[in-house]
Length: 142
Picture (cartoon, helix red, strand yellow):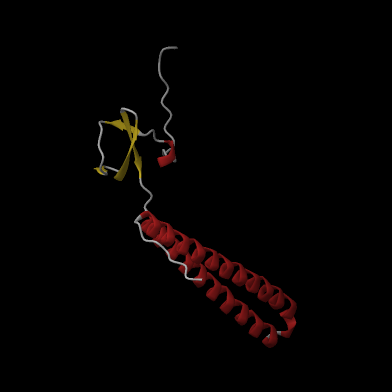
């Protein structure tokens, strides 16, 4: 009984890329294609370690998608704030409730706009990293 191995099956038990050990392969000077995408070959003495390359285009696309969601959220929350402002004017009996909801919606719109701005910055940073990784140089004239 004590020799039995217990296998735990977890619903969300997945290994992340950072947790997977690097593969040791034979000597190669060029990039190779593996099952997980292109890998960069780095030589350490006689041992070669393959490390996955960053997929900057995929990261840039992700940040662009999240930026658009932030803009959509800001637009929706702003529209709801205007709707509540209108209801506050039309419904004097519940004016305080509508003013509170208007302020909350306005705060959410500002937060979503800030998130969209943050993602825009992250998208530009990913694009810059992609250009640097592929040898494109930025020339600053001033």
